[in-house]
Image (tube, rainbow, N blue to C red; front, side):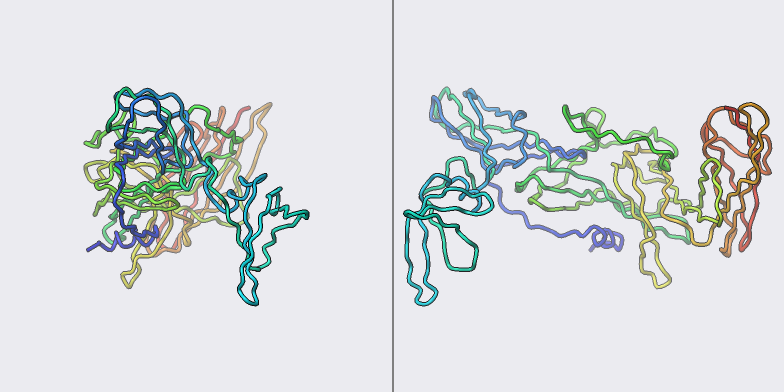
Length: 462
């Protein structure tokens, strides 16, 4: 029986099981997180000796033909062709341009059939036919008309097919492995965390979410997931302009612990325990992490931009902090993904309270995730005065009013950003610490149903 957290995770991700069907050949699929997969197709082929063509149906419709490798003893590859033009009524008609087809018309009154030959002239926006000495457009007007073709064109396939011309040294059966890279297969990690406010602990369930849009199903495949994004030559890298503010970091302390999980170079491997069928246009979830009772801290954070001032108080962020250490933590390396937080209401039902993305996280790290804006915890930042002290020197007086409508005291981590260049704090009502060269941080205590005030004076030189 699944735990309540597992049921919650399944409902959150929309999991639907797909029964596996017997495989015609053995497949191994290695899937990376950057829309790339390595497919290894193990088949037994029949060699006739000499030159012959071997067809491999059901390869990926997005196969990268230049990455194809066929490993088998006693043969030499002469040529390979990838036929990705799939058989559809529209494609069948397009390939029939310049050829004769047979039209079958049915009289709606008596059901009688008549047949006549027609030459397909064009299929641009509609089918243009030459019948006898006149031109006719085949309309989709609901009248019972069908077209009979003499054969299927050689370059149209019912399924994506790779054909390989080889020269075999002998005849007989031979084990062969077809390997290739393909986009259209990817995975990500999804996490569900249930926070217990009473004892400040979380239960975390981790799910691998597979997505297949490659145009082909992979039956009963041995599946290996790689947490990493290998460089791909020629990949489209789009330039994006720099943002004025850096996004809030979620990794506050990088871990230094090693675990037992298998590595591949600088990547971690997440093999699925059982063979699985990855159907085309399917999203599939598989559990890989289930940890209960991990200590977690709940707090509040407010980040103020340089010269940030507002007409009204703004909400602080609700923050949850926990460790991935093997000791009092999750005890695993976390692939990049989205972590969704839940909390039980008074009736004991888990309710969604927010989500946050995480990057690839080493074991032993400390994560600090924001789930949303706090309703009752506010910060009002005000630029009290700006004074020019001299050429290129300015003094800025700031006031921060922090308030809470909660029935218990809270600590708000107030971060003042933008302290770039030669900026000094001349005075402050509470001692700050420097999170980085351009960010000052104060841990401000706010009483229950009360408020606190912080002032600071900065000197900036340009």
